[in-house]
Length: 53
Image 1 (tube, rainbow, N blue to C red):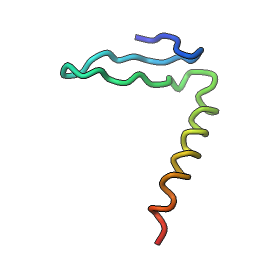
Image 2 (image 1 turned 90 degrees about the horizontal axis):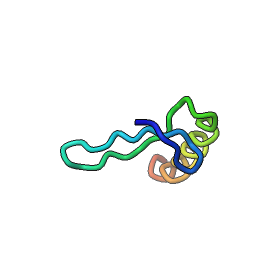
Image 3 (image 1 turned 90 degrees about the vertical axis):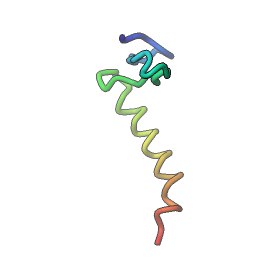
Image 4 (image 1 turned 180 degrees about the vertical axis):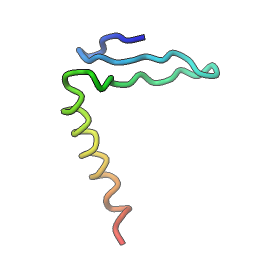
């Protein structure tokens, strides 16, 4: 089921094994590239120190 949250096009997949599955941003949303770039930048900042040798 697709719907709008915060003005974004997301898919809500309901439940799995009685657990609520998280909604996710659809790649067809016009802001997908912008939001995914922010996500990956933040993940890199958080994970980079643990990846250093």
